[in-house]
Image (cartoon, rainbow, N blue to C red; front, side, top):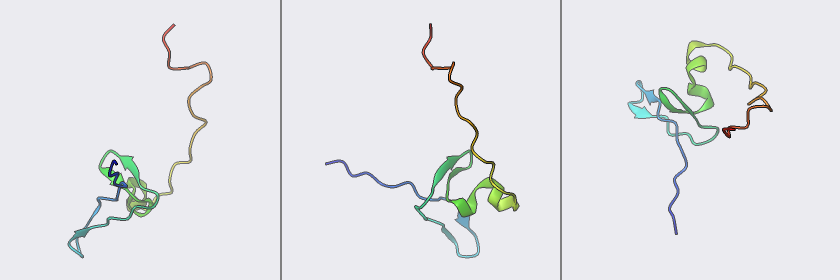
Length: 64
């Protein structure tokens, strides 16, 4: 059986001298895995960018 680990926030909490380690809502960003409280925009005090419409329907990802 495979042992799967859930991704966890790896933001460094300097005052507490530890990583955040939350697992709820964690997503990958350029600086690493981040929970909603530690995304790049959250750390700047900015709102998150809303999700866009996604990949256009005419772009299937398959070469023709």
